[in-house]
Length: 453
Image 1: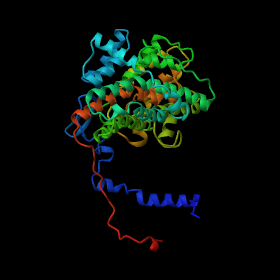
Image 2: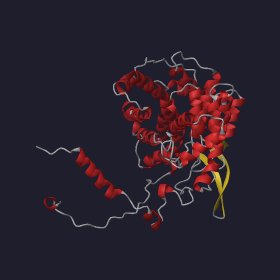
Image 3: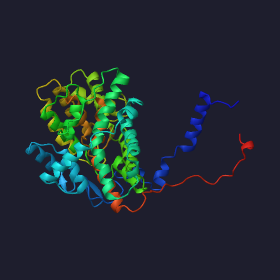
């Protein structure tokens, strides 16, 4: 009879794994390893060139990093201009943003109308997809379901999937931009029924709705929403649509694309990367942190009390023990994150005069005090600003969007940016992405199995 691993065996194996896998941190300095593809000053290692997006947060002057107000530029247009003009013309901007990212130009009225129509025509999921892929295998994690569903769509379009021509790639990209919101909402509804014992709502599609309207319409039991709510969600989609080729999920998409794999595999991998708490899942961490502050601070408007609790968190005496103030700091932005600037203004406008305004002011206090306290408690001189996650969770709550969908909404938006980067990699990449790793093990003499201890 074969021997079965016991708990003690597993613990011993974990010990062996750690002994043979953990690397001495000093070796990274000895061999000048740029961990995370980052230099010692935190700036990224150049790994490619892109026309799609510029994330600009500092200048390097004579070898020193100079903080500047952050800029997010889609195909040459600042996110401020894109959001401002959509507001000025009282229309939705995500579809225009997706078109711009994909094709590199702002659409005309006719082009945007045709793009809207194409998206509407391709939102419908294949027959039986919801039953076979969601109801028969429900998941409590919607990001997991998004990734699996994208991979599953390959089976429905298999004859076309391995075609490498640009027209087919564009059809696949736009098809996913259209379908991902529907997959997300349906996966959530199934999750509610199966795990939360809630009523299952499956609404028919409304062809004339924008992406933001479609999400709210499909999500809410009564299908009701205001135009202001839909436009706020639309703004969030615009802000999350793209963030440069170096962010973790986009880079993941480009790495898989460089290998020659199909589009569905590349996009699914990007969703898996975004799922991580250090990337797209960070807004959930901010929400949990805010609840922790609310529970442990008696007077939210007392800056002294807030400061004392921030110090405890920084010293790992409170919070989740990580020593991190979630929502603060960014790999590129220094003085400000333009997405956070835009979202904070919109969050205040929506919260003003309502009960949730107190929570907004608490986040604002945390944002103002954290950089100062980080310098005091840790001697950190690096300029630190709030990132988009600081206020996105609060806005989602005000829109009555469940926490289960915070990160999936990020993916629904970012599929536009991933698609643009996949096209760029296909057209101009040319080489498989393969960074080098320093190998440490020395050669060992093989020991026959009968002689091993």
